[in-house]
Image (cartoon, rainbow, N blue to C red; front, side, top):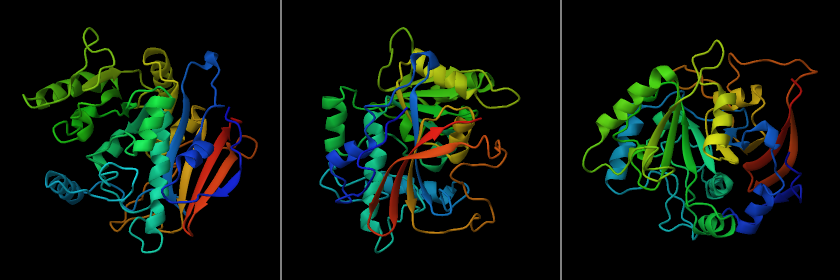
Length: 347
């Protein structure tokens, strides 16, 4: 259980949030999980509009992929935030729809605080879990602190490796673009793909077929690699009851007992976060709320991804609803709120 953050309410002094303010707000020194639970301490980290939507588009667009891949091949950054804390001024090279208001003329400069806090989660995490749809939206997805002060704190103060383990949760790993996806072609990452028994062998074969003499990532081997960087491991875990997806309770137990993951960040869509909540596996929700309302459907008429992806999920009555207990609140500028909640389960 996480203790309340002190002070409870404050404004960040700068969009490039100073390290001491990051630690004050997102530190997890008091967060513990009973050994008997055999799972990591887990939090989600999300940015959403005031009406609870995480993206302007319902699905990734081929044009976005092509544009992003071309930009990266030309040495360009898809999104830029100039910051003294970064080596080259670049930040997350993603195809994103500006839910964080990066391109808004007044709010844009303050959106750097959102990215600083996203990186802050990666400081403390032993592993970061993303989902298949996230990789399909963002060809350059990776969860590595890009700010020098944060990377130094992770390595020199917390005594952790440079990068958290990258966990991919999916039921269709066979369909990934292993040739172009950054995560599967990174010499500095240890990637673990958790998928279903029916998908695992074919996904592994697809990855092997994507390798060539220039490939920097190799298939993980228990005999030679352990947790080595530059490897991709495929793991088949049991299905949840009456479902086609991996059993999350089993997955969390496996991460703790097999990979020794004590702190886990969830950087995934609302449906994964909601499933974690339904199974009482999420300890915190960390949310950047931006001051814009966008509505539930994109320009094609499709439903936009929402904060908790509630469609088809459990519902609770007034005696069993999940309680969000506020641990701390921060603000910057006129358009960004940063909220940290602990979850109290009653179901």
